[in-house]
Amino acid sequence: MQYEQTKKLSNREFKRLVGVQRRTFDEMVRIMRDTVKTKKTRGCPNKLDLEDQILICLQYWREYRTYFHIAQDWQVSESTVCRTVQRKRKCVG
Image (cartoon, rainbow, N blue to C red; front, side):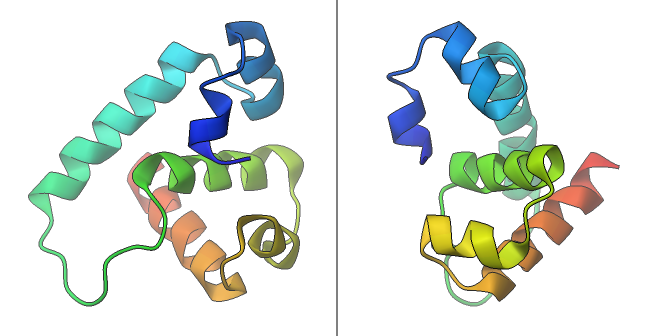
């Protein structure tokens, strides 16, 4: 489920789906946006929005699904999911 679709969910449903409260998720996005602004980017732009990247990471960390299954749900390559999770892991800690 992409971020745009989660906007339709109630706060309770959002937490059930993602595992964190909506305001916690918004804070994560804000922190990641600040981090991304300070970095110089090269190469192709990301196929996924920052919100979607964070949703992918939360889905991986919460459900421990394989990169392959997550990639199928999001219609991206397995390596894209792997890179996304690895990059966010570095930022988180």
